[in-house]
Amino acid sequence: MGHELGLYHLHQQKKKDVNNKKKSLKKKFDKIMILVAVLVPLAHIPQIFKIWYYKDASGISLISWSSFVVFSLLWLYYGFLHKEKPLIIMYIFLLFIQIIILIGGFLFGS
Image 1: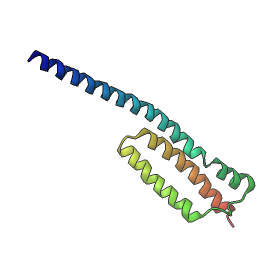
Image 2 (image 1 turned 45 degrees about the horizontal axis):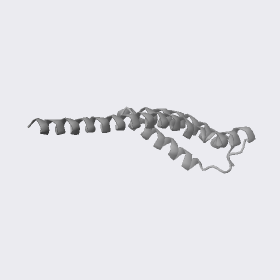
Image 3 (image 1 turned 60 degrees about the vertical axis):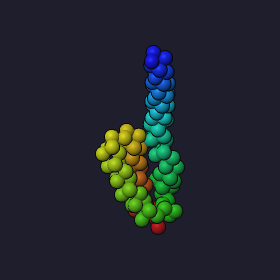
Image 4 (image 1 turned 90 degrees about the vertical axis):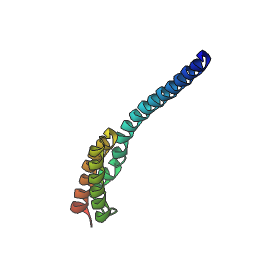
């Protein structure tokens, strides 16, 4: 009987170790996703530069960028509902950038 309890304890310890490793990996991945949440919107900077510096929005679709704004609003709402910090950060930045691109498209589109 005592021997069986020892095996049970060993099994429980292994389970805890696996759970701790998963939590550690999750925390590391959460940090990476916060970085991604900042980098994704920054990837749009060349588009903003082209539109606002050269006053040229001929290559963008106002329908597409309007759709991106609507979809980003939905994702932002989803992020708030589920308290997902990376989604909230990314979609706040994305909305800001998409609106800048959309305004430039209206002003400088052909």
